[in-house]
Length: 470
Image 1: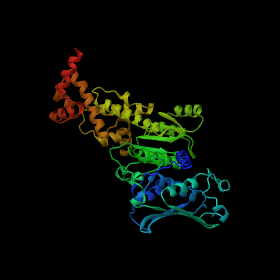
Image 2 (image 1 turned 90 degrees about the vertical axis):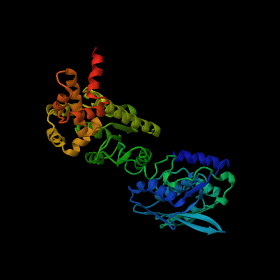
Image 3 (image 1 turned 45 degrees about the vertical axis):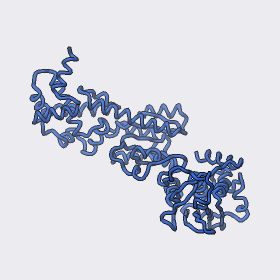
Image 4 (image 1 turned 180 degrees about the horizontal axis):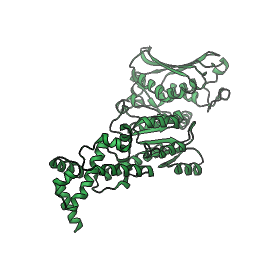
């Protein structure tokens, strides 16, 4: 996506059609966020440390955030690509005055192999590819040329200094005063909130939305491609709580210790393939209910067949449209919530609504049978239920919640009320007697609770169903 965007900008630059739209932004937060979210996760494999520093805690000024994003991305990605293993990348931001005008100064320094004086002369030429083959990296020859054009569009300057064997530093200076730009270059809209900017045209949530949301579903993303993992995380975390794993082994450890509502996994991964992860999920009573979405760049016919045989709920081929993935996630979760609601509000016992696997059927049937065996025992609560199901408190809670959408306590009550519905229609006992028969010690409280569960009193339920029978 970034490459396509850069090609479009490059063509505009060639035809002198590049336009600037500046808005007021905290440049320090903007640069820091790009470093943290776009690059810090990518340096793990070569143990390259990124160090961000700023002479100002806050530096507000006018810049075109879309153009500045492309400038930073090109410079920082080069500092990473042409660095040494165990190296460092230094990104610094400072403010300065030049001829009574405010400027932001941004430098990107690496501890890589450096650039010879001869090659420095051609760095900003279009289609100059440098030594990317020597360093086994990918190059297009447009990155630094476009970067220079975008800096010049801002009425700024870019310089490079390098020592072979020691590293390279790129220095960019851009004016940030409003009067440095023409009226047609000022974005008259609201100021840009740099904390919301992610880049690649994907808007993330604000800081509040990035906190753990107690009332939201939790997704586990399993992907060994660090960049794709971060892109999916940034997109989905505005709606959901997100946990991440880099392979199937990590994923299983997370699943055993966290309440998860849906799993998105890559097919081809080190240590454990996605279809193997799905098979383990489907064979584990504590996890078998989880919806699973498979992502794959493999030849579709075979990997799709393997995935569905392993028990996935949806399959998405790479490369994929982000909207398609979000629609799959929203659809599966919305469908699951609909089934939860239908089961809970129904007066009849319909466990098949909740069944996803044979293990789930065995689990639900056993849970309902145990509750009905103790239906009149008002002391039959969570502890006794845990013991009868032979599961730990936390495991049973996650399983019941995952299968039914209810806590164990709510599930026990719901089963009691459904059992009461059967007794009420038999006409062999009064409402008060039915209340005692299903474990309630207070008939009035039973009637009030029954109405909260089904939207009608026991008496209204009897009258309504008698009409249906007639």
